[in-house]
Image 1 (tube, rainbow, N blue to C red):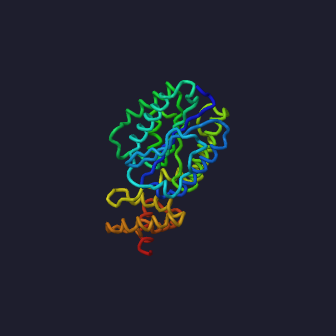
Image 2: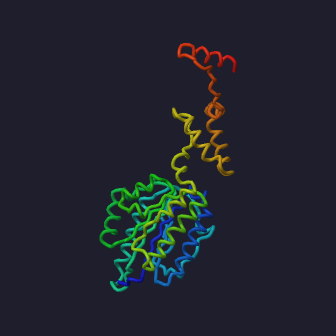
Image 3: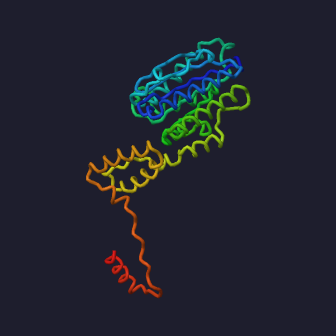
Length: 300
């Protein structure tokens, strides 16, 4: 085994929802590659893209020869077959490693998954299958699994599979979030490959970058209001409060308004200001307080 040698398997989500951050994904991935090429340690890389299809771009390619992504080589589309993609990539990486002579095997294996969604179309692998594979490769061969997810539910599921919580990161689904998460994983990997870190765990400063990018608001406030649901007015207030901060967000609000109004609901009824409470005279008793309230109501 060559303890200086690291193999990296990188699994990148190419589903349709990645279109929003397409340019940021390309830029972040290319910065990651450039940074890793500067490390004076041997490394190979297997790169897969997935949506409802699973596409190996290259397998065990010397890192120095890895090409950067561009507008034509990264084309978001389709659904998110996350389980099938992870399962197939783990199996293929494991089989390739087993075929190597012992002296040619890498001392470190890092398996990175980046997705902006959650499972919705897999047919071959189940959650139980992924849990078994992660445990086997982690416990028996000391693989370092890293999970980067835009959705909190996906990150929690990755931890259920056995990926260490310290190695998972929820990132804000915007330019700042994508840039920050790729910078963090690249820095950690550089340190891990060079012997400066014992694992691929993220630091608090990495998570703080995502907070500043809006990841907490993303968790709380991005549910698109559905007028068919009982509490849609509350969802609307959160939705508009979050998205009203950017030009892109305002366009999203206009689109949601049309959807709500198509159901005959009034946005104005949700957003109109609450009238001030009346100023009641001193020594107002409980008995006559209601009388003042009615008087104020008529005077409006």
